[in-house]
Length: 396
Image (cartoon, rainbow, N blue to C red; front, side, top):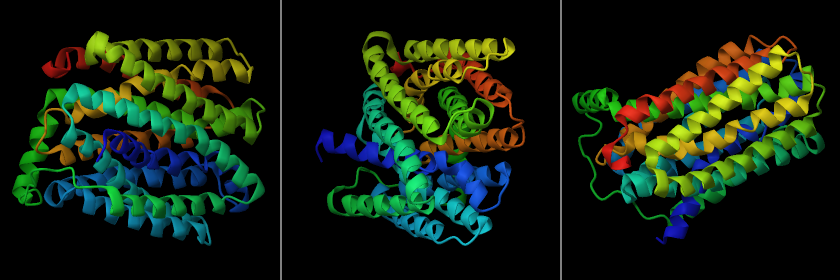
C-alpha cells in the first residue's frame, strides 16, 4: 500500500465522524418540526450516536488487537450501512434515535481502527504528521458535509442525508475489501481474555502520557460538540441567521480546521509535539476570552461571534492529530485498546456536555458562549500543564 493510499484511506475512515454528524446538523431545526420533537429530543439523535460511538470502542479496540484491523473495519462498516438504512426508513423519533445509536456503535470500529493503523505503521512523531494529513482530508469532508446537508434538507428532505451515508458506507466497504492490506504485524491472541483486558486497561489509564494527551483531545472535542450542536439553534434563534447561513458557518469551520492541521505540520518539525500543543492552547484561550467579552458586552452581531468561534478550529486542528497520536504512542502492542479508550473518554465527556447544553438553550448566546469558552480554557490548561510535563520523551 502506497503512503498516499494510506493517507487517503485514513482521511476517509476518520471522515466518517464528521460525515455522520455534520451532514444533518443544518436540518436539525427542520427535523424537530417534522417529527414534532423538542430541541432536547432532537439533539438526542446526536448524543445517542456519540455515546454509542465512544462506548463501543472499548469492545472494538481489543477485538482489533486480537483479529486485526481489516476484519473489524469490514464488520463495522457493514453494520454502519445497515444502521443508515434504518435511519432512512425510521417512522418516528424513538426509532431514529435507536438507529443513530447503532450507527454510532458501528462508527466506533471505523474510527478506532484508523487511529490504530497509524500506530501500526508509524513512529510517534511521524504518526502525528501522518495523522495531521489525514485530518486535513477529514476537514474537507467537514467542509462539504453541512453545505450538502443543508441543500439536501431543503430540497429533498432530511432522510436523504441518511441515504447519502449509506452510499458512502457501501463505497468504503468495497475499498477496504479490495485494496486494504492488514496493517498489524503481531496479533495478540490473548487480547480478549478478561484478566488480560483488565491488566491492559489498568496499564493504559495509569500511563501519564496517555492521560495528558487524552485530556487535550477530550477538552478539544467537547468544545467541538458544543459548537456543532449549539450553532444551529444559537445563530438561527438568537442571532437571526438562516439554515443556509449556518451551513456556510459550519463549512468555514471545516476549511479553517484544515488550516489548523496544515499549521500543525509546519510547527511539528520546528517546535516538537509539546510546544505545538502549547500554541494550540494559546489559540483556544484567545477564543474563550473574546467570546466571553462579546457576551458580557451584549453584542448581538452574529458575524462577530462567528469570527471569534472560528479561532477554535485552528486550535482543534492542532490538538487532535498531536493528541490522538500521542495517546497511543507508548502502546505499540495495544494500539487498538489505547485508541479505543482515548475515543471512549472523549465521547463520554462530549455526551455529558451535550446533555447539559441541550437543556440550557434559552434563546440567548450564553449557552454556546460559556460552553465553548469553558472547554477552550480546559484545553489550554491541559496543553500547558499535563502535556508539558508528561508528553512522551520521543515527542520532544
